[in-house]
Image 1 (spheres, one colour):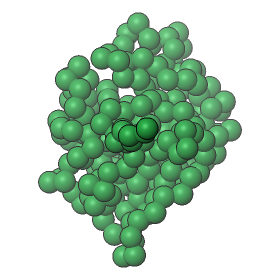
Image 2 (spheres, rainbow, N blue to C red):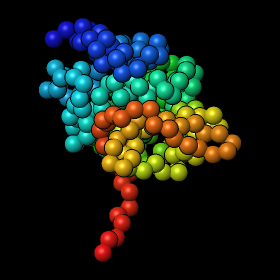
Image 3 (spheres, rainbow, N blue to C red):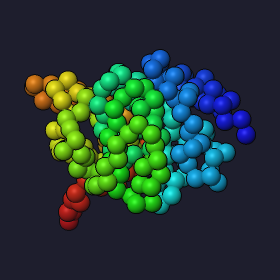
Image 4 (cartoon, rainbow, N blue to C red):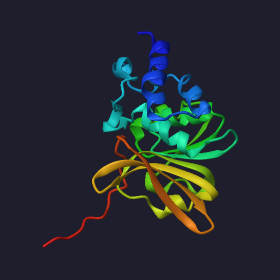
Length: 210
């Protein structure tokens, strides 16, 4: 399979039509070999516009969802980013290719070994919902997957003016959300409905019903 051609097709048919327009994001995603971040048996489907199975039951999110979040976050060279739920390291590698200093948080031992081989990033093994407070604060926080609630502990690791992106389930609909921390607080805005791989550790508490 011609993976270079597959990457070009991904840019043209998936990223650009879904408002992934930041040149830095497009260039990085056109360079990083997505097939290197999935099991060998799944390499041939690494560029489909759907989630791709990883080891341990986790999934690699569609490229367009990642690209849209990075575009909306306005990532820039030299900034520091926290990637929550880094998996095998694809999104971390894209950010590193963009010139961003990356701390990648992962709690799945089946994924940590491969994550540790990604050049240019710092790996933190721990609970996803806790982030990496000792390594913060961060200019950018990417929650790389679908979650039901956003913990305050992650927002607190943002610098003033820092940006956070996640796929948050809102009234049963997963939406890409982006927010900026200011002196007045933090708020999220929806930018698109989208599908991303669910992350463990972010479920809403159960509500008792009678």
